[in-house]
Structures are given as structure tokens and as C-alpha cells.
Image (cartoon, rainbow, N blue to C red; front, side, top):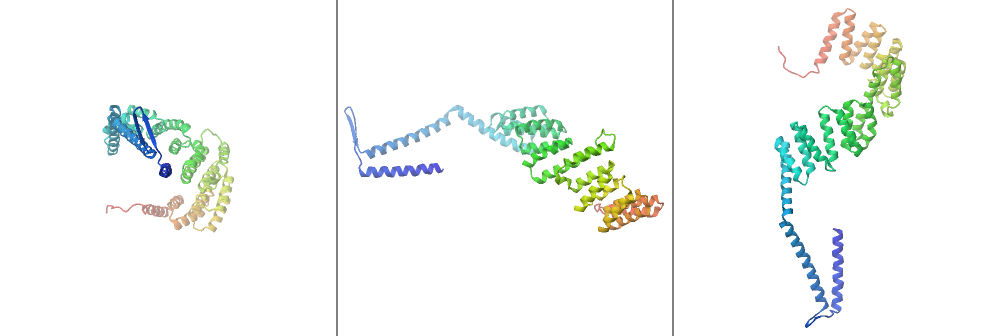
Length: 406
């Protein structure tokens, strides 16, 4: 647009300059050929020449347009394209409405004749997928793959269909090939992460996290990263093939060095790691990790780790727990843990006191269950039944209000 305006301005300036020049001296032009001669002013001759040139351009454009309208091949091609566009539109509407067979017929025809074959073939593939026709599906995706722009889309659809069919390995194979062509494609990376999650390939998913951060929002990536590392810690701690706890604990400690710093301070991650260390005979290390983390920030998921510690005397653990209770009286998580540690120390009265305090402070269903079990073991069946009644009432309060028989 700017270029056209500039050309118009230059043309006006040139015309003004030419008019001024011709006004100063119109000049004289004589044309002679044999016995024929014509004389006129130079300005009139220039004007006639310009008008003739403009008329020639206009006539040429008109004749070209008429030729294109009349020329049989192009007219036929335009007609076919118009029909294909209508078929594409109608096929899409029918696909949405659920008339799959008719939609597929229109879309496949639009793919052969239309201006948008890629869209038509991909939609036809959706129709074949709905019908469960694998042969037609591959045919349509193959047609779409013939288009340079459709190579990624058809591969992505194959991977998605494979994942929906419960074939994550096949989907992974498709996506890994696509990632070589488009390493930073958002849709491919997202689906690949879903496939790795489905396969429980946590190391591969952890390695993919930096690439996901380039294309996804931080909150979404953080959730995936946290889930992957939590599962990876559990997988290593429970990995089959180790005959002794020391080997498991050694590999778990090596893995912990690779955990991102931000996740090492996550209470759930720290609780899981410390809990597995405690189960593998590293109770002192686990206790140190829990105390260190709670010194920075309190979280109720950490005290229960002490229940799994067997290589530290229960009396020492009770001292730690009672110290926490002095700072946070009535904390149900600490009270239940203290009660269970007291059971390990065979301090029945103390365990009963802890469980009763937890039940009274929060009506915890877990505390009531432990209390009922302890009462029954002590032979006090009446109190055990009362505790179970309270537990059932606690659970009933979470149920919806519905009509019941009289």
C-alpha cells in the first residue's frame, strides 16, 4: 500500500512537471510518411500516447479475465474445487453430528479434488477411526503423510490412536520418530510425556522435563516432575533383584543426589525418601532428615516416618515426638505416630493416652481404629465397641444425606 501511494505521488509530480513544461512551450510535432503528413503539438501527442497505453492495459486485463472464465480446463478445475469445498464443509458438519459413513464419503472425495486435501484426509481418518476400519484409517493417514505439512499431524494422530487403544509402546515409537523432525513441537512433547507416564518410564520422563519447560507452563511441568521423581524414588526403593536392604539403600542414596534441589525440600518427597530409608534400616539417617526438614518448615506428612524406624530405640523416638507435641499440642499426626511408637515400646498405657488425645482432638478415624484395636487387645470390649461406634459415626458424617428405611 505504501509503495502504491508513493508511485501515485511520483506520478502526480511528474505530471505536474510535464504540464508546466508543456505550458511554457507546447512544441510542434510533424509526422510525414510518403504523401501523408500530420502536424500537432507535442503535448497532445504525449497525451494520446498515455491514453492509448492505459486503454491497452485495460483491454488486456479484460480479455485475460474473459479467457480464464471461458477456458474449459480452468473452468472445470474451479468447479471441482468449489464442489470439494462444499463437501469438506458438509463432511465436517456430518462428522460432528455423528453421521460417520456419509461424512467419510464426502471427506475422502474432498481430499482427492479439493484445495485443502490435508484437512479432508485427517478428518476422514477420524471417521475411519470411529468406524473401527483400520485399513481405511491407514490409507487416509498415508494420503495425509504425502503432504509435507501433514507428516507430523498424521504421525501425531497415529500415536494418539495407539495410546487410546492401550498400545503405549507403539505410540512411543511413533512419537520418538516425530521428535527427531520437530524436537520442540508442543503437542508432540506433551503426548510423549503422557506416553512415558503411562509406561511408568520415570527416568525417561525426568530427562524430558527440561524440554517440556521450553513449551509448557511451569505449573504443569512442576506437577509432572514431582510425580515422576516421587515414583522414581519408590521404584528404586522397591526394585526387585536386591537381596539385602543395604544395596537398596545405597542405590536410593545415589538417586537422591540426582533429585532437583527444589524437590529435595518438598515435604512429600522428603517424607517418601526418609520413609524408605527407615524401612531399609537407615532409621538414624531418616530421623535426621525429618528433624532437619521440620526445623525449616512443619508438615504433617513427616512425623509418620518415625513409625517405620526400627534401628533407633522407641524411647528415644518418643522423646522426639513428645518434644514436637510440646510445641504443637493436639496435633493428630504426631499423636497417632507417638501412639504407634509407644506400642512398639510396649507402653500400653502411654499408647492409649496418645490415641485418646488424637481421637478427642480431631475425631481422626485412624486414631479411633487404633484405639479400638488397643482396647480389644487389653480386654476392654465395651470401650473398643464405643471407639468403633465413634469411628463409624465419623465416617457416616462424610456420606451424603439419603433416605433410609425405618
